[in-house]
Image (cartoon, rainbow, N blue to C red; front, top):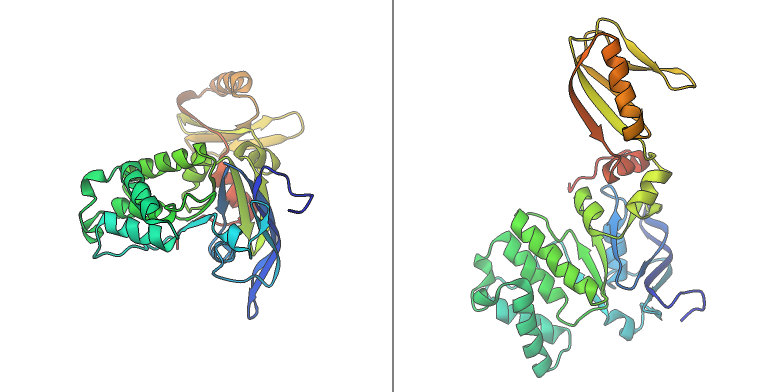
Length: 318
C-alpha cells in the first residue's frame, strides 16, 4: 500500500482519465471513500458517473490514473473480490425463485456450498422476503426486485459496495426498507458509493457528497461544507403581504438598498443571515409600511441549491 494512503481509506481514486473517441468522459477524477462511509456520487447526465462506476467494477479500463481498494491496486484479484456492484438495471433471473437467484449469485461470487446456504438465509431475513423465498421473482413488484437485486450484489460480504440508482421506480415503503438494509451494511463497516438522481436521498442518507461535472470533480465534502463554500448559509425568506404592494419595497442591508418586492405583487422575498434576530425586525418594518403579513416561508439552503450553483443543471434521471 502506498505510504500516503491512510489506513482508514477503503477506496482511493487518483487522476482517473477515460476517453471514448473525442468524448473525454473522465478528466482526472480524484477522491476517496473511508471505511464504513457512505458517499453520494452526483452529476448531470453525461458527467462521467457511469464511466467511473464501470472503471471501479472492472468493466472498463481507464486510460490513466490509479484505483486502490483496501490498500491494493484494483487490478489485483484480492482487491476486486471485496467490491460489490448493484447496477441500475435489474440483474435477476426472472424465471427463478428468490432463493434460487441468491444461490446462483452466491456461487458466482465463489462461496462454498455451506457458505451459500448460510448467506441465502441471511439475505432472505435481511430483505424481509423469507415468506417469498420460493416465489418466482418475475412476479414481484419493482421494490421487491430491487431488494433481491441488492442482496445478490452483497452475497460475498463486500467491503465496498457500488450502488447505481438503487431506488429507481420503487414505492416509499420499499425505498425505506432499502435504506434500512444499507444502514445494516454501514454498521458492519461496508463502504458505500451511491449514485442517485434523488438529491434528498443523497442529503439524508450519505455522510459526504462528491459532485462531478464534465468529467471533473467540482465539489467534495459534507452537505454543510458544500453549502458554506458555494451558496452560503443564509436563509431565503418569502412573505405574503396584503394588500398588494402599492410601490416597490427596498431594504438597506448596510451596504446598499436591495429591492425585495415589486408594485402589484403580494410577495416579498429576501435573504437573511439570522432568522431569530432579523426576521422579527423585517416583519415589523413591513407592517410599518402599511402591509399585513398573510404568510411567512423560510427556506434553508440545500443540496439542490448547491448542485444548481455548481453545475447549472437540474439533476434528472433522463
